[in-house]
Image 1: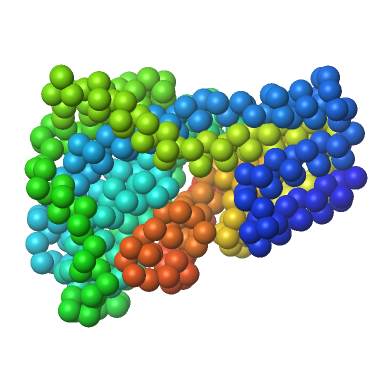
Image 2 (image 1 turned 60 degrees about the vertical axis):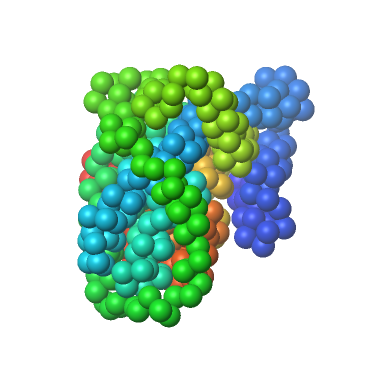
Amino acid sequence: MGVVILLVMAAGVAAMLTRKLPTAFALVLLAVVIAFLADAPLTGKGSVLDTVLQEGAPALAATMIAILLGSWLGKLLEETGIAGTLVRKIVEFGGDRPVFVALGVLAVSAVVGTVTGSAPAAMLAGLIGIPAMIAVGIPKVTAAGTVLMGIAVGVPFELPVWQFFSTALDLPVDTVRGFMVKLFPFALVAAVAYVLVESRRRGVEHTWSLKSVQARPSRGDRRRRLGDAPWYALLTPAVPLTLALGLDVAIIPSLLGGVLYALVTTTRPREMNRRLLRTLYGGFEVAAPPITLFVAIGILLAAVKLPGAVDALQPLVKAVSPQNTVLFILVFTLLVPLCLFRGPLNVFGLGAGIAGVLVATGIYPAVAVLGMTASYNQVFGVSDPTSTQTVWSAQYAGVSPHQVMLRTLPYVWAVALGGLCVTAFTEL
């Protein structure tokens, strides 16, 4: 039966890759089929309806709330001009020095990446940052990749990501935070190396050849007319991180603290109610796709943790899972491309189910699975041509997502290698 379940998973991957089914729908359908194959009853304890669907759907509720609050804070950064001000100040500081401008945009992208992810993060940093980089001669592909690499630097400190791994792998937030702190230096070094190497390797491109980008900074012009945010408001992205990392405050209160700080430092009292509601509703729009995906992931995790599924999959998964430290690093480093194109190791897809199987069957400690999935997430967030932030950044810069993938993949592959080395030598 384990072989049949694996074949069903492979069919699910094929359905997602060929766009026959949206990822969330494919994961739910896959979960129901796995539950039936695991001999789960229709109702009652350990059943398809009551355990997989009813209990699985809200299993990642804390992550969903964190995603919503992060999206809300992201909308506040946009509406109040905080993100735009950060980018403009950095660009002004860099002047006409391409590498300095790119490093500045990289830094702002990292700051934004700690607050929110996906396309909203790319837009907050890229709407002004990408045209500014291209205007001083940074190649288009390098400009798009700089924003993505910067966001990846911030991802290890993105609080909703902490909450997701904590809930999905049943780990304390402190444990997740500890590994993310170890992963951060690899992401930082790779991002800086990307900017220094790619901006020099490709040389300066003259701005008069970039007609497609010249007409785009209209939203940045509108923000400039509205004026810059106060200097103390620019500290907003640091507030939730300081609360969670420095003062050990829980994730949701930390994000709420960031929301309140952004509001108080940028908004007159009589306008607060309207801005709160407007940005909250905007946050719901931004958060709807990932929340839908997390509902589906929760359902899939519930299915693969059923006793019948665990018993069927354990001998097969154990037989192909390397236990030796060096083999662990080698095998899972070679498998990095499988997290691209919504592949089977994408943690925000079938990869979450595979991670659940590895934990439920006891093949690896949960902390080791955290290291593997978090390392793969660094690759997916930058180089996957189907991820929303990659598509947006590439199209806004006037290049294809596949060009960005080819240019950034060696760097994020190295980040994954670093994360896997830390995992293997500390957790196996």
